[in-house]
Length: 593
Ligand code: F6R
Image (cartoon, rainbow, N blue to C red):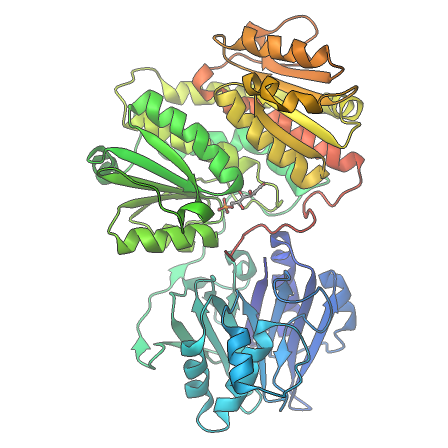
């Protein structure tokens, strides 16, 4: 999704803003732009280009600047083109704005205030900048900006430059994330912590409905009525995991390979010698509730499905999983004493934020499980648990999925009467992951031989079925092969009609109770021409099974069976020459509903 970076200070805004935008590339974008202050000409130049940041960089003809703002756009209102790229400038040339989020009432405001005005772009943002200019002709710019913010419905993270105040930058936030970082050199502001790393020593995530006035050395935070809000900044500490690709060709491949290390790290964070340490107040609160509702989207929801099985089987607590975007507007009957777990790698997903706002209004208790400690969902839920997976840069989530399952397993275990040694079992999973990853390249040939059609099926039962849903999502999002994850027994009730000569069908078999049934379903599709591949464990394997994994505790099987499916997706995308880390149409952090 869109990214924002702004800088004011003694450093060079040109390189700091461009570097910040590059660090946000992983979020997905289709055009980029920036505005830099030219001290000699006393003028803010605007540069924008369709496509990659490199294209923008090549047209920025200034070497140095003390102040600048930049933006990567993921189109929502209007086509992908130069005109719609940010920054947007008011027709009188005074105000320049970059904006993340969506202004729902922009067309109403446009018709009300600007009848007959010709806009340069199709964006909601241009209406906002014109409104600011309109009111600033009648009052101080700070008041004009706050007045306009109060008129907006929707979401925004916004930076505003007033050409009449070249040493000042204004920022505002509602629903879309925005963080301010500070060092002795200056102030940086970004929509993602990654933009601040390397430039700031301390940071402050802004709250909703805050308005900030930034100068080279300092900033003041206000509410929308102009009352000063106090703040305390936190020290910015970089994670142990680097955000560089290292020896790997793609971030996705690197992140797949990091999974054993992430699992070991989670073990070290959540266990001491023998016991789990999760805040006893959280466990006590959950125990006082009768049903857990898991809310999540995409891959995180697939991890939630495995979490449900673990919470029900280990802790004996009934649990339901909901698609966040549905739950936000179609809340089912919740029953007595519901407890909510929100799962989100980024901690910024707008669909989940919409759910959380409703939960808070109804006084329902909540826990966020996230990879980003400083994220909105982590800050706003009653409790939070961290994934400790390190930055996940590839759009297709891999290590966050396994980290989510591991943390859910630890949570379920810590509320159970179980006596088995989860710490040891998880360590064995890490070892088995590593053992498989040592021979990962064999998956390339298997994938190339199998995935020759435009469609594919994953089949399995129980938790294997839930891993199939994730495997199918991974394959379609980066290889663009139409893939379905299916409950193996359900295929014959209609969908088997799609099986023809050469249709790829991949089976996941990890459960001894259902292994034979799934194998029968595999035979059914084989006899109708399907080309098949089996992923299973040593103890369940038969002659001819293509991917055989080390035996582990069966309740943790998804942590391991998913890994070959991630590699299948990777190699299918590689073979097709796709942009693996930035698949088309997708964004890493989905901050619009
Ligand atoms: C797919 C993927 C997405 C995310 C989903 C939720 O690989 O990454 O399906 O899982 O957009 O994002 P988070 O977990 O950040 O809430």
